Image 1: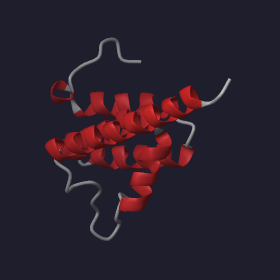
Image 2: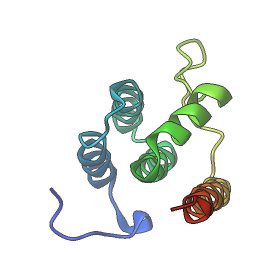
Image 3: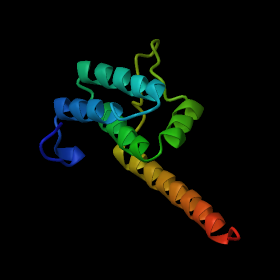
Image 4: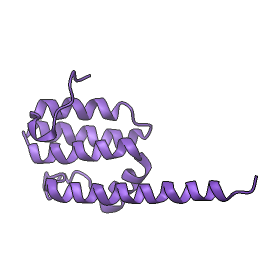
Length: 123
């Protein structure tokens, strides 16, 4: 485990890889964990900090709702492409953060909706 949490912008490639590895160990969805580990290893090998940042952000979001993030990853085709040898290279941090904020808002709305349904059940 890392001793102290750091801002993503202050992390080295090794720090990001270590943090991704720690996070995916907690996942129930091993398919998603494996995809993130493979992509992170490739990004580390290529010293692709942008991809590592994107993958770390995805891993952090998946900690909150693995099912939702997995459906986004599956639905949007965020897979490593062996022909172009790219993975998530089109992501920039600002867009990823905006997407995550939107996802968090969706999660909040879903939780609120479920909470309201529970509150409305007759006792």
